[in-house]
Image 1 (cartoon, rainbow, N blue to C red):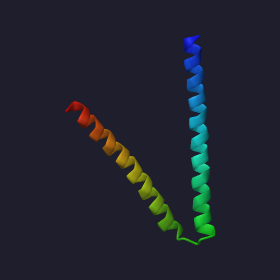
Image 2: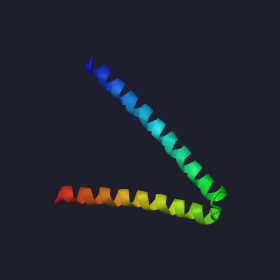
Image 3: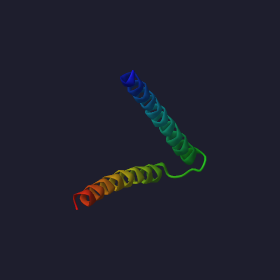
Image 4: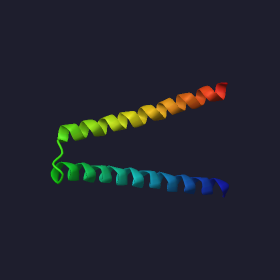
Length: 74
């Protein structure tokens, strides 16, 4: 019975993960579309800014992960 609860919880978390990933994809697509069509922002500059933001987000997570591991070893 205990294993069934863990499996059910894992399935629920996986479902939520896919839901939030789809929600984020649609939100970003809508924001980019509105920015290009309605606000008439340069598409290349907008996409470059978006890509740069994503790279910074990943780099900060990696940096924080490395910094945390260094603190654990001290």
